[in-house]
Length: 329
Ligand code: C5P
Image 1 (cartoon, rainbow, N blue to C red):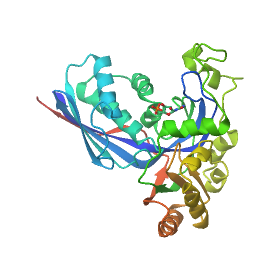
Image 2: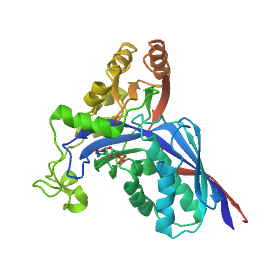
Image 3: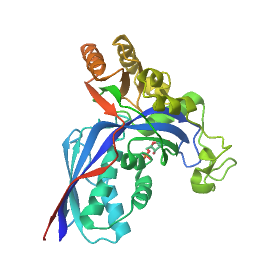
Image 4: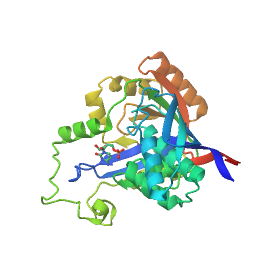
């Protein structure tokens, strides 16, 4: 018996806080971030095939379907690692905005790893899948884990964080995305940072995992404010609202000044606080509860500052199998 069909769902994320340090010699930036997975999902259906092929539904139907797509790279990496000689046909149904700062592509990759692991019976542990995830991109491990987690290093070294209650968000989505590398480069330009050469002083390439100087006790890397961790335990959105922050917000606003109108509209609509998610351009506005989120969303829609205004909740679980159909091939 072998699996004939596996369906996996993985969530998008917002960054409740995102602290960014100057670039390392590999060009990556040391981060300290607090991820919350939210109820906007990527669904990946995996079926047996000879090659690795991909079909896109929902958003992003103009994205590449070859190795330029992170889901295809995820399947190829697992196939190589697991010594698998079969292929997969992937159908990815996207809800998460493309290039929106919500890690939709990373969720596709995480869901694909889990789906192909089940389809091919490679039987990797969650830890092994997380290692492959980190090779694929900085945000991919979190899409596997979900819920609430602190991320350091490139954002891929995760520690689960305790969070109480459910938070209600209004997401202002733009149809034109922002390029993450472009936002980081703009961040560097605004801060006057330059990328140190790999061989030069201050190189962190030889350090443990290239990130050991970021997370260890006494390390100089950015840190998540302990007040934010306490806020998540309070289950009180009014407390959480005081702790939302994003060091990339200024760079996103520099590249897309209209985001200032979105933040102002969220404020006028009565949101408790609003912040650009990750590298943007999605803006996440925090509401008091579900009905308040609906009301804030209505006012923000009327302000016509976004292509789409959605309501979501968080935290939600990471990548999980929704369906696993067994059959004879
Ligand atoms: O890891 P991922 O491919 O998702 O990152 C996309 C880009 O974002 C990187 O190529 C890099 O330019 C930038 N980035 C960064 N520092 C991080 C994470 C991402 O500079 N910690």
